[in-house]
Structure formats: structure tokens, C-alpha cells
Image (cartoon, rainbow, N blue to C red; front, side, top):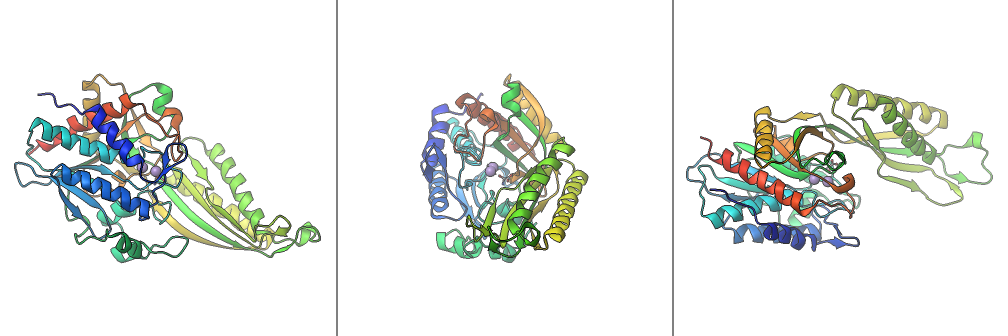
Length: 409
Ligand code: HGY
Ligand code: MN
Ligand code: MN
């Protein structure tokens, strides 16, 4: 019996969630544990309950909706995140969670039971835009970070994860990781240009590249922009700018999957006629190859040390996140490819450039990801878009794969 996802049900759910934290240009701003995130969580939990799922909230705010199976076996789990960056699109994360709920709705409508339970999850603070590290909730779930350390993570205003979880009413009782899935599948938009450029319908994701996030605080001497000779300057802003140029050139020289981003930069006093005495900036380095990522980290650090000496400024480094590349379960990756091709969808194998909760779940159980195209590769941008037909196709691959896995002994 062919069970089909329903276009309007899935697209309607995406539109409804996109209204929460909606921003100019059609995107979403639902920073983790903000009031907007709470509102989004409340909506998705209500949808889970309306589908008859048993809803569990854990001590780091991860939420899991469980559809019982015929047998008391470990569930097959799918899911993603519903927190967004401040300039987010409406599909990043949200799509994987709502497609998981659409699978449940279609199974309910078809009156189909499965041997194994099916679980749909959303994890706390995947984005890492407000609190670091990213993938915080799934990292705790997979046992990679202790609860107290996670609770202590604080945002720029000094508000902590623990306090904010309590404030929005999502500090749950369940032990993170108590539900250990038999397999985890995450459906996600690619967020890069590959599938769109090559006109491929489904990305069969084999791995997630390594991620290195560091925050640098540079201390120099503020001085008059007009009277201070260049030879006397100790310009914190100059070091920050030089790292940006160096990192760009380094990524170009290394080639391959190497990328480098100086995404956040704050100067003080940030005035047109004052040499900055303080700069706080972040460096995001990524590569599919751990040795190359380490090389990039070392070369950036060496550059910073060299310029700091020349400019006579002090530099403090704080690691915000550091994850090695993750390889997904080969057998599951094959099954993603099989189900996509069974629907006559073109496929290509690829790494993920973005971080995902799936990279943490691979620590717990066989895990794989399904990608659908992002138009022009845009993401973390309000114009993030995926064609409705691709959204539905990805959800159908997810349904067919979850059904297969949920019947496995
Ligand atoms: O940064 C990332 O790759 C993810 O969006 N957290
Ligand atoms: Mn995401
Ligand atoms: Mn993201």
C-alpha cells in the first residue's frame, strides 16, 4: 500500500510555523530559548499532541513525540531543530521536524501501525547563534556535554541556557538520551548550491564536515585618529581586519572544502575618530578533512600571534565549538539512495557543509540525512527557498525510509 505525504498539509504546516518570529522578507527570527522560540515550540508540541503522539520534554529542552509501535522496541527517530539564526529562512530545521510530523499524519490517516515506535524530535539550540556550542541539545542528548556545562552557556547579555529554559517552561524532567533510537534520519535543506546547480533532486548525505568556532578578544590602546602616528598605534581593529583577509586567502589557497568566516565583529569605542582599543570577533573554520582543519586552525593562530606582536596588542582566544567530521552509517546512506531512486528522483552523494543534530545522533545509533535543494544555495538568509515539489519529494523519501526501518526487527 502506497502511503503518500500530503502537499497542502506539509506546506501549510511550514507556513504556519513561519508566521512565528516572522521577519521582513519572509524569513524567521526565533533565536534559541527566546519568546519566539517558546511560541514555535508551543505550536509544534500542540501539533504533536493533535497527532496523538506521547510528548516527552527532557532536561535540556529537547522535545520528542512518540508514536507507539506494535512492539516495545527502540523507536526509529527523525527530527531536527526549530530554533533559527536571527536572519533565518523558514526551512532550515523546521522542514525536518514538520516533515516528520507529516509522516505521522499520513500513517495515522492510512491507519497503518509499525512494528517499532516512530519518534519525531526537535533539539534545543541547534543554531548556536545565541548560545554556543551549536547542536547543544543533541550534543547533550548524545552524551557529549554535561547538563551543568550546557546550563551555564550564556548569551551576550549574560542570560544562561538554564535560566532561559526555565523561563520559557521547557526545562523538562526526562533524562536526555533516555530514548535511544534504533536509527536516526534527518531531512534537511542542503543550504548550499550543489543540488540546485546540478539539478539533482535528493542529496544522499555521507558525512558532516568538521567545525571550529573561536572567539578572539583583542586589547590595544585607544588613541586619536588624527594625531597618532602609525608607528605608535596599537590598533585592535587592525588585527581583526587582518585576520579576515588572511582567512579568506588561506581558504582560497587550501581549496577543496576549506571555508573560513569572520561572522561577528565588535569594535570599541567604535567611533570614526578613535583608534579602537578593543575588538571581539569570531572565526568559523570548516573542512571535511580533520587534518586540513587542524592546519587551517594552526595557520590562523600563527597569523594572529605574528600580527599581535607587530601591533603590540594582547589577544585572548575562547573555543566556542569544535567538532570533528562525522561519517554517517553506510548501510543507512545506501537506503536513503535506494528510496530516492525508487521514486525516480535523481540523487548524488555529498558531505554536509552545515552542522546538524544528526552529527551528534550518529554517536548513539546508525544515522543518515536526506537533503533537498536550496535555490541558489541561499540559507541563513530570509530568501532561503526550496521548491514545494522538492519539499514534498524529500518528505516522501523520509516516509518510505522510516516505514522500512520501523518494520525491521
Ligand atoms: O553553523 C551551522 O552549521 C549550523 O547552522 N548550526
Ligand atoms: Mn539546520
Ligand atoms: Mn542553520
